[in-house]
Image (cartoon, rainbow, N blue to C red):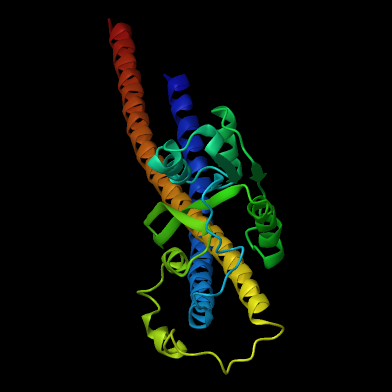
Length: 305
C-alpha cells in the first residue's frame, strides 16, 4: 500500500509541475496577445489611410501592373500558419479553410499553386504531397518592412512573370480574444473594392471619411513628383506591403489568443486531475490506516488468547 501511495504522490507532483508550466505559458501568451492586438489594429488603420489616399487620387484611366486583370494563368494561394504548435485549433482551422474550400477544389492541379508561410502549413503540405511553390518560415514576430519585402518580392516575381492570374491570401481575421476565423483575401490584382474589403475596418474608421473629402474631387491642381504613374505605383507597393504585414500581425494575435485559451484549458485540466488524484490518495491512505488498525487489533487479540 505504501508503494501505491508513493506512486500517487509522484503523479500529483508531476501534474502540479505541469500546471506551473501551462500557467506561465498562459500568462506569456496573454501578454503577447495584447501587444499583437494593438499592432494589428494599428496596421489596419495604416492600410486604411493608404487606401483612402489611393481612392482620392485614382481615376479610371490609371493603369498599373498591380491592377492588371488577366484572363489566363495560375491562381496562387498564400497560406498563413504559425511556426509553433500548442495554439489550439488555429492552424487546423486555417488549413481546412483553404483545402476544404470550393475555391481550391474548383481548380485543377495545373491551374493552382501554393505558397506556405509557417512550419505548420509546410508540414501539412509535405505530409499530403501537395507541391509548394515557395516556403517561408521563421519570419520575425517584430516584423519590419525589410522582412516583409523579402517575402513579397518572391510573390511579386511570380506575378511579374505574367503567368499568374490571381494571388489569394488565406489568413485568420482577428476579431477579439475569443474569436478569429480564416478569410480569403484577393491580394493581386488590386482594386479599390478588394482593398476596401481586405482592410475590413470601415466600421472602426468611419470617422476618418471626412478627413479625405470626396473621392471624386478633381486633382488637376495636385503636383505629383516624380510623376503620377510612379507615385501611384509606389502607393500600390506600400498597400501590398501593408496588407501583408496586417495579415501577419493578425495571424500572431490569433496565435497567441488561441495559445492563451489552450494553456488556460490545460491549467484547468491539471487542477481537475490534481483534485482527483488527491481524492484517490486520501482514500488509499485511509484504507492503509484502516488496515493497520485492523492488523493491530488482530495481533492484540491473538496475544490475549
